[in-house]
Length: 451
Image (cartoon, rainbow, N blue to C red; front, side, top):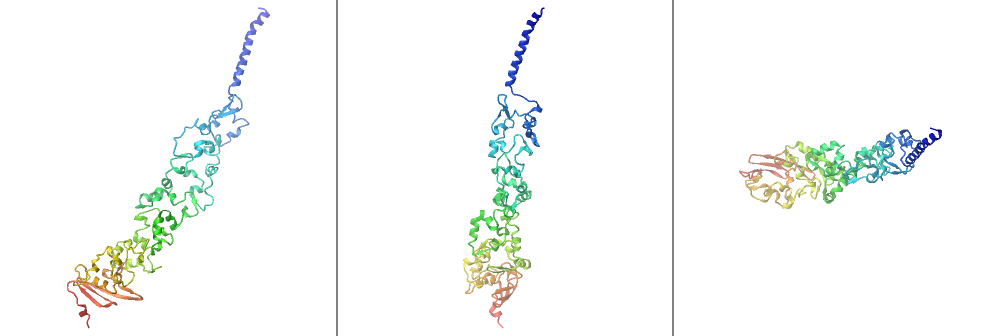
């Protein structure tokens, strides 16, 4: 073969190879440029800061920008793979919607999370605690002298979920369950209690501010004013009483007697009724309407106790909140030593005792009679009628039938000596000469008292 022939034989393959290389080059220019790992966006001198975090988003950590950024026409221009929250849902599964949603969770995750990475876990912007929340929310700690523990430590997520919740305020649980989740001692008290304050079962925030306040225990108000939020109508009614129980208006007011959360007693009483009363009435009290005896001393020392006192039931006769009757008695009873009889004056006594004790002049029912002469009727139904307390002590006595040992008569403490027999008895007092009575064989006191 000649040199000229050889030249013509090789010419076509060389031209074809050149054309092929040009075509491949044109195709490569239109295709996305996939850089090697050491030459990727995050490894380059331009975007090295995107991997400088303690926690990196997965695609960034793998040097893969393309899942979120799509190059346009092979140029250094990009469009997002989605808008706002939709971009995140390209990889992350959507949660089933709940009634209460955090606004950024509904629209744009990047409001709270940095899409590349962060020094905070979950790429939270601003900080993992309250600092992150305060990028949008005001600092609830400002100006408060008492702070709830989680708030003081900036741990908002102890009570709130950052995405969505079944409960108002993005709470992680129902209100009471949320509080007892930490305050387990209160949960135990509620479970074993006889009575529970409704707000404790419904929402603690009815009485306590959840973040903090200017009062101890973050109470929304103090003393009686706190109770007034719910019990206003009742408390307003007690203000109209002629006689107010001082415990209602002094010290801790309602909480002097009631437990604000739960109790082993009915009506949220802080202790057994008797103990509760005697904790205060264990010394003489100079009340606004006169001196009140040391009741605890009486109960301890009297041999014979009035039935309600013996049962520890002070409220059988007294209204613990107040009354229009003296000594906060539940029903009417004469205030004076002497008083004429009428049914409406003795409502308190005849709640338990038979009214015929003072209505029947002659009787075979009462034990206090001389033959058939009813001596109760004789004492009460006269111009200067003797009230029950003239002879009987309302709490008890060291003499049978609660007969007083001493009768207060103005400044004079008049002694009264009572004796009881199987069929009657007798008394000697400053009211009259010694008299006796007998139910079976009537005593003629005029004859027996003659010299």
